[in-house]
Length: 552
Image 1 (cartoon, rainbow, N blue to C red):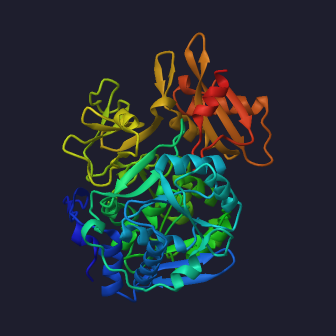
Image 2: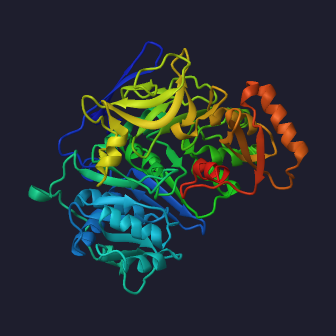
Image 3: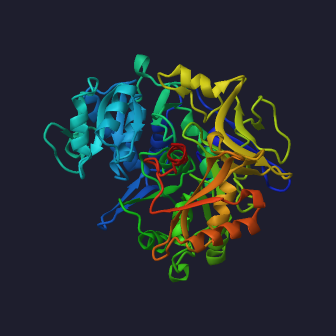
């Protein structure tokens, strides 16, 4: 069987089977819609591309031919509404199947998709529309989101077209009816409408833990950059089915539900839900014979609290995780229950996969893995010098010879912010890690999260991982709080499981546990129990908010 990814990526392996190098071939006019979707729709029309199910039990199956034709209808429909090459289109479609028609259609047109979460409020939409110059929005109308869009339009002069899915709404174009009237053929644009690999294709508002979200702009080559995500990390099976848990508003959706998977000719499973229920998700493994799976560590934390012996997970061959650092306790408990090792990976909205436990490697619980050969990476100190083994440094990517495939082009309409992270020949991620003697990277935290106490530099993740071992801890965030003697001391803000009371005795128990599990100077001198932690819309803990409260 011939796999599409071999046309665009070539790997080199060592004698031990370890991945040594990846060379990507990006044609000047590469377009994922035509060169992947339409290619497979023509050469392998009956091969399943996507299986979709919602919580109501509605199910749909789409072949590559179906996706080719539905995306063509959608492209023709969008063009009839005036959407053209270069237009920025805000797309808020949760996990609805129309998202896949829409994103491929916009790629074919050359319009720029700006995915977003349905949790946005009116002010969030106004900010995004005006910051990116959004001209059209495609959104679901099954919640208050449409009301927020309507309210935002009053303060958004560039927004002229609103398109809704699933049900009609006054003042909006109706997607479902509109595409049904269109031709299933959309010819590749030529001349001024032709698309090129180095032109903008997709933009994401970053879910940073400080300040207003920035707009990370990726080119059409970004899709090819994700071959390594699916091929050498997810380890997708062209004859199997892959499930990544991610809302389409976040970059992780195209990491695991689109580009790399389809370029490896694997089917994706989409489970359309609003509220996560571990039992519902676990039952899908047997129903669809899921072969590969990826989810953030939070999902696995919920999984290991279930009796996994009740579920048939026998089809599962490979499991990965990213989105936040993986606590060793979660790795060990999941492995004990399933016999499958969690292969952690790391990347950002601004990148594709940059560090991972790749196929053929032996994961070290708690380690992100090794740098991707797709990038030239290093750890650097505050003076821009490489650090030695065991020393904490900032994760950086070499860009002296140009932007590597998969790395963003910069922050749209914000050269100042771009220059803050791209300088001296490197892209500075803002994430800190250290490298062990075997070349594995260990996450420490964001540069702003590192705690400086009595001359020690303390990373929050190590302490969080120790505290997360305690069965009564649901979530934990480590921050530094001001101290007149030590400069800063470690504080643990903890969410307990239901039924557990946060007492003074429990604080001492947690403190003593940390003292005995790691260096004594790292133990939390301050412990606070809360009902929830402040988070970004994407679910990342806002340590900056915790610090701000303690610095008042």
